[in-house]
Length: 433
Image 1 (cartoon, one colour):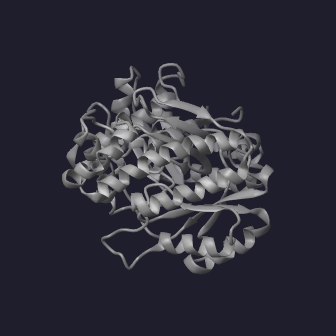
Image 2 (cartoon, rainbow, N blue to C red):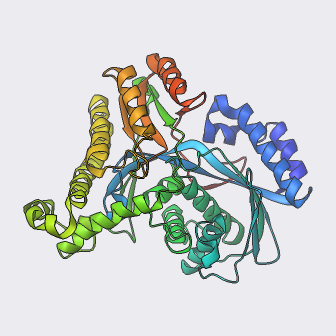
Image 3 (tube, one colour):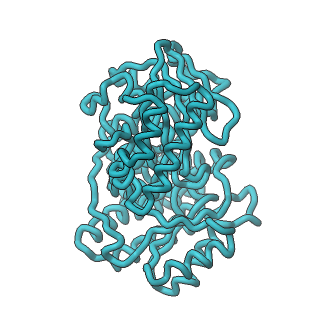
């Protein structure tokens, strides 16, 4: 552990360069060095200079397959990306957590003596801090106070899971500061489950577990939620550069902020189908039994719930097939499956745009531009919660600049982000990383 003054000197002298390269790539080291120094400056401006601090980092994520399947115990493929939230943290002697996030005026203040939901915090970052603390304790861990300054380049409200990254980061802080980074009692999957608990119960958003798992674990992973209490997580080798491709996440400048009810409707409707067939989740209903019951289901749950269930079964299968295609080095098959999943999300899951404002269709527009520019090469799909936010594209390297120019030309400069898969999840950031 070092003081803020010592940390800035170490960063400037290159002590952290190797760790930064592992998280962000060699070319990004100078920019990340400056970013971390700026974060320490931000901490000092709020909490004062000279305090002993530690760095923490948690990545955003991109979904590759299994759109809205996790909350019904399905299968997904996802990857952590090299956009992240970083935190400068000083442990305190009391049991009060203070978190100041760059770009926000208010400091979130949470007394972790109270680990029950606070209604006035619903929908706010303070709810996530309190919920993560409560989850840590429920998993047998310890919690206490700290001061933190965070800065994030995970696009908020855009489908890269900024909230899950925040939850994973808070979990890593509690684990590191009060539990000795105990990876047995509080492993990465436990941190993910704690984040979901915080978001469901304290923040009051009915999310699944995919986002938190991808952010907490890192790398390219498949997740099977047949047993949500112990999801099976497998890392999948995934080297896009070896195939001559880049991963592009394009921000259509639409926000997820007012769409919670539309997300909730997907889960609610899928579960209504399961309930009508005597189960709680679709994963518990055999696909053949579901299709045979469609005539009766129409009267009970409505057509949209049925077509969303059709998407669930097909996209769970696709998530497994995506993993197999990568493992078998069948990259063209992988790209075709990505496109098929995108069509299923648009046509059956129906989360390409919000019915509240059908004149605003940033995601369909970005997909149409992608299809036009790539002209049969690569792949493109909506990703994340949908309705607004970002799309994903796998773009041949020889077309990358043309693709970026086309997306930026429609949605504004800097809308197209060229990313890498990050092999680290939520971590305490040290020179020895």
